[in-house]
Image (cartoon, rainbow, N blue to C red; front, top):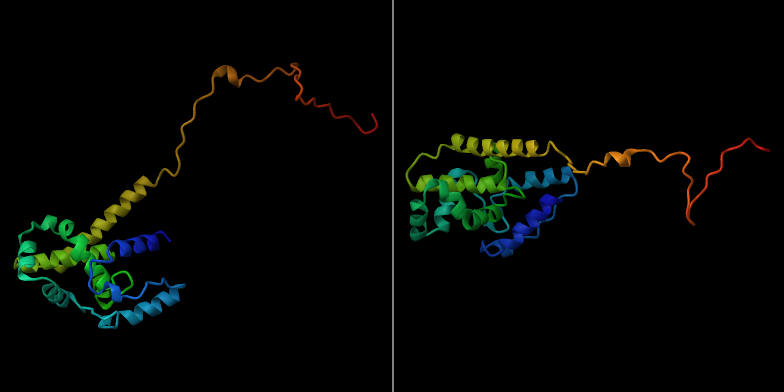
Length: 206
């Protein structure tokens, strides 16, 4: 449920990023695992989804990114340091890839990236951004090394969450004063209008 709400929030916040976004059908989560798998298997075989061409591999994805950008835009991307590429481009170009190429719902490109070991939609977009940046700079993309980077990144984040999740609940209480731990003397009678006097139990008839 949380993941679905985050997805809806991301859709709402990024609706203006993609020119094809208005053509997309509302995303309806599958009711069962079987239904999800059936839809997924259908989607990954299609070369178009919601009127948008879906690249089948990395080379085709980069070719599409060339079409999405003009030379001025590509020059700006080329000039970015690699460690700034994802931070600078994810909110626009990255989000357009996520939604146009159906990384959440599943597509043949997302399936290709999953097969390479990149499983999160945000990571898929960042993977392609880095690959595009390297291609623009005539550098080897090194697909395996790049995919390993994202796998290790997610593994590290998961381990950190596990460490933080070791303490389920922590509560601080004041320790009672020593005199408050002394029992009330048995001989002290209850007093006051609301006091309840307990009578000793007796055998029936006494």
